[in-house]
Amino acid sequence: MTRDNIDRPAILNEVRAAFYRYEEALISNDVAVLDELFWVDERTVRYGATENLYGIEAIRAFRAARPSQGLARTLRNTTITTFGDDMAIASTEFTREGSERIGRQMQTWVKFPFGWRIVAAHVSLMG
Image (cartoon, rainbow, N blue to C red; front, side, top):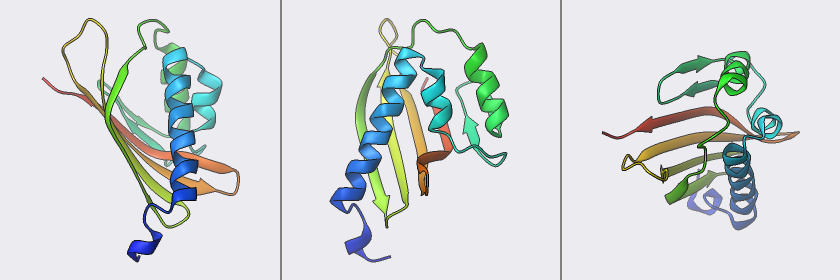
């Protein structure tokens, strides 16, 4: 991988658009878009603040069961790095109104013929 293949503007813009589409779907609880943006595969992994989810079916079940209120959050220190044409890492910190806790989120995105999808995600809370 050469430096010329890292953060190429067109690819970075594609991933940014997918990342912020995911974020909008997350805070508005648009489960259809959230499901769409995760790779539909049993190898997809999402480690949450209180759960470890293996496979798209476990991720979908979690989304269907979680509360739809109190999802708004403010992002900060968001970093998206692309590698070549078909892989990216997105990381961000977030806070929620009424809480001092800082959340952290990392996603690994891969571009498939049908678009960018999250193949692995990790969400955690500090302190």
